[in-house]
Image 1 (cartoon, rainbow, N blue to C red):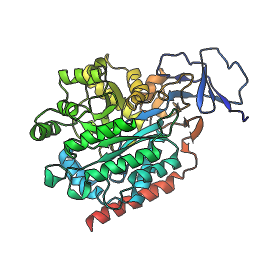
Image 2 (image 1 turned 90 degrees about the horizontal axis):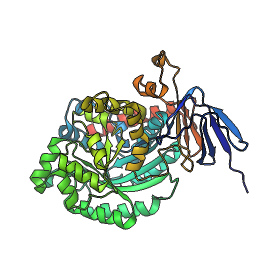
Image 3 (image 1 turned 45 degrees about the vertical axis):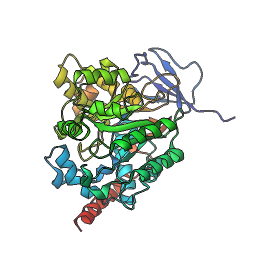
Image 4 (image 1 turned 120 degrees about the horizontal axis):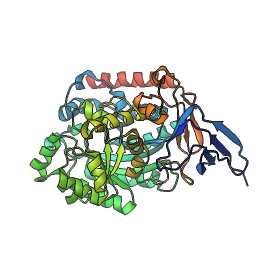
Amino acid sequence: MRHELRTWIKNPMAIFTANSLDASGGLVICGTKIEAILAAGETPGEPVDNAFDASSHVVLPGLVNTHHHFYQTLTRALPAALNKELFDWLKSLYPVWACLDEEMLHTATQVALAELLLSGCTTAADHHYLFPEGLENAIDVQVAAREVVGSRVTLTRGSMSLGEDDGGLPPRTTVQREETILKDSERVIGCYHDGGEGSFVQLALAPCSPFSVTESLMRDSAELANRHGVRLHTHLAETLDEEMFCREHFGCRTVDYLERVGWLRDSTWLAHGIHFDDEEVRRLGAAGVGISHCPGSNMMLASGICRTQELEAAGAKIGLAVDGSASNDASNMIVETRLALYLQRLRYGAAAVTHLDALRWATSGSAAVLGRSDIGQLAPGMQADLAFYKLNDLAFAGSHDPLAALLLCNAQRADRVLVGGQWRVTDGEIVGIDLNALAARQREQAKRLTARHSA
């Protein structure tokens, strides 16, 4: 029988476990999992195969990003979309996105995952809802691209079925027939979803938003998800325009609509979740719904500030997300964690939200939002997903509390990252990926996309 390698991550400068365990002596990894957590002064009880001295690193559980649009890395800072609020911003970008092809999506997915991994993010959820002609197999393309980077993913089979000619927001070229959507949703779940412990690919169903899908598709997606045991995801209550749309088209507020279509359940998570009243907060919490707080995007589009404290107190799960790279315009989870800390202090006050709250949202909170109990914390039996940060840059000179400094002094990049016990980032570089070549491909694909739109 092959011996599983045992590695001691020893003497960390600081470590955040997301569960209050004392891990100042480090931890032992056996194969893909954490075997033991060591308190101060403790050493492994049995010999280890190797040891990594983490005395110059701040160690976190791998960060978990709960909402993204990988394809949007192709349309960062696009002039036509600058300085607009959500609906106008979307209308300027939909025609560009309709020109996506498989090669573009493959590269964009690698870019987004690589950028996230370099920031210390080991698991990411992507909300892909664009399936124009020629891109019908988008989820298959993303699964293949993930293999190259090695991160864990929750890929959501998104959808848009309500075009502008039927009262929705997206143009007809970006929507699909509901029968096509449901058939492909069932196909990709059967092909790729792995709900087991330590899985690298999970699937969820994600009709895009109230203003881009029909009520019947929301109901049918909920039934399909329930039948196959997968989660549900959508945008909800991001802007007041969306609230007005729901009132005009469905005769109710957003949470009423959510309940009406069978989505008010603990297997649902919502992107943004900003404009809820007190009663809606109570209902969402009672149902155990998850919320992806997207501070960078919410500030860029001036959408508002998520009520994280009230939602969490009511029982909702709170996680963090970078959102799409056309509204952020970055895929950096450690920076996003800093933004969450600062934006939530703006709502609740400097004494009410700590750096530990933000780190918890980015790790165990985000894992709970995605329905995963095997990641997001450092504890025996958990997957060995860890992010290591050095504080030797000028920006950290003179800092005292390492965990606080990670956010307050604006950490940008992980020095090392483990995913399932395997080093995926060493010395700030992703193992096996030529980042310069990847960036060059992305620049070329972005030019090709805008040229195709202009033609």
